[in-house]
Image (cartoon, rainbow, N blue to C red; front, top):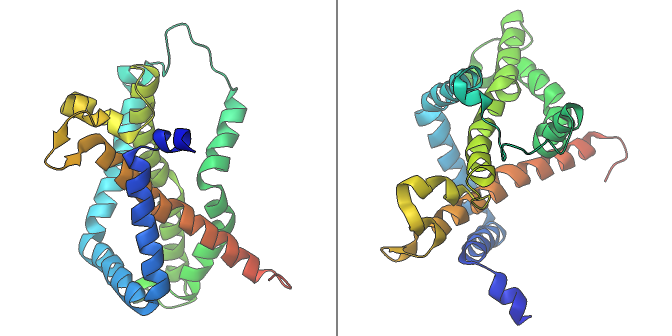
Length: 228
């Protein structure tokens, strides 16, 4: 037991504490939790929706430019390393470990939902403009833009992991800027710089990635006749 505890880094404790705090908040004060998180979501959508659109488009332009530049030829591995997986296996893994659940459910549900109830009243329900709007939203959410966002983060981590022998952590990407502080060896104020970033990333993944996928799966099962 002591060996296991010694292997648990501050990243685990910070992430676990934040996640548990959010879970307890949602269980003990559901109405307050719903109101606060709903208000935060509305602020992000209404006040910063334009930034989201611009940023995701910038990510897409960046990765396309990167792919066709001289940097696109950099191998994510040592010069003599060979791929462990074939192209077909790698392509399948992208969906299995990435957008699989979302594509299966929302690829059909989202356009139908927007067609019957266009967001923000931008078109009449069931009309031709509503159908056009529904497909635009769906392609933005599930076509190239999200892949570009994933690719930028994944490429940064992969480069430092496979080319610089850094750990596969978000904090490792910041080594050129923060130096040894990404290892938690030096303190910034009262926080360990690298641990802090990894913990926030872990908490973000718990809420923004895994929870929606579980909800999608449950929501889909609820639509199946006889499913409980």
